[in-house]
Image 1 (cartoon, one colour):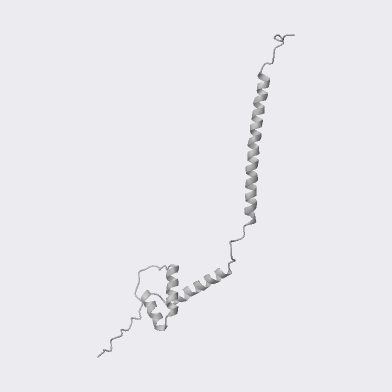
Image 2 (tube, one colour; image 1 turned 90 degrees about the vertical axis):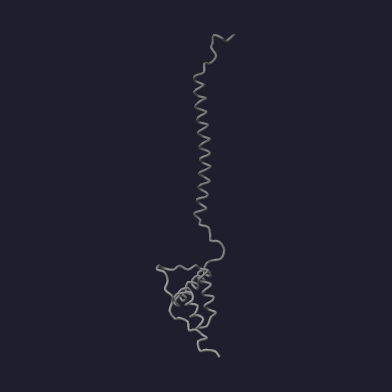
Length: 133
C-alpha cells in the first residue's frame, strides 16, 4: 500500500547563497534558457529552485539574447570597410621612407664632394721645376 508521502513537496524557497554578485557565463545562460523553455510551469519552478535563480533573471537573459541576435543580424556581413585614412597613412609612410633614403644618398654625395674638394685644394700640383720641356 502506497503512502500519501510518495511525492515530496519541493521547498519553494530559494537557498541562501554567498554574499556578492553572481556572475554567469554565456554558455551557462544559454544552457539554462534552452532547458527552461522546454519545461512546463512546474518544471520551470523546479529548475529555478535547483539553480538558485529568479524568474527575473530568465527574463533579463532572454532580453540579452534577443538584443544580441538583433545586433548580429543588423551587422553587415563580411569584413568592415577600410578607413580611407589608413590608405593615406600607408602612402605617406612609404613616401617618407623613400625621401629619407634620397636624403641619405644626397648627404653621402655632399660629404664625398666636400672631401674631394678639400683634397683637391691641399694636394700640391706638379711643380714647374720638374717639368721637362
